[in-house]
Image (cartoon, rainbow, N blue to C red; front, side, top):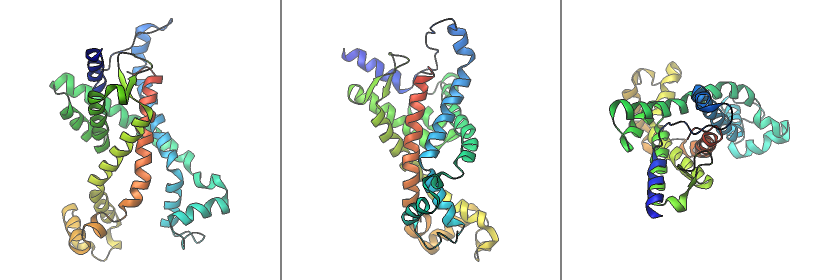
Length: 269
């Protein structure tokens, strides 16, 4: 029994993109023909669910950034209360439909790319484990590596406690839903912490000539050095990180959890 659980856990850590046994008239060939379409749909749905989860925060952020005269005197949480009072609860989701049109292909390609890179690196380079997740994650997004590693370690060390058989392939272990949410949130937090100084640097460079110190911030390294020298770490390179956590952690948790569920729904394990 223990040996079987260990074998299943190792299979779950990095399952090969093998086609599941088909049922009905479609057969294995039909499953193979539509594999990329099903993978595309799974990633797109995951991206849309994640973005919808934090849509109220994005709406408030835009209102505050644009100095809307109704809300410019408010903070984030007071604006979250004020928008429903003035525009109704749907006001928090204004523009979300247009966002879905943009985020669906983005999320689909991002998740598809990670799975494709992971398979390609394994088959072509013979690299597996944490290294191939790091390489694939670096090409598709810093949080994919973290989530994949947390998933692999969790299922390897506590398969019974953290995992369950996949609904579309009982030979593959997947994380339980609440563990998925936890791992996705942690992955998002770690990814944001690592990449946030670069995001701050990028935004300051995008502001360009609006800033008085423009001539001192022509390159990424010069900009980062300037921010660190004049504002330090907490009030410079990581300014606004707490708000980003509020947006990113639940978003990533929902994204990875939805994607894992969609993989089972579309028979991708």
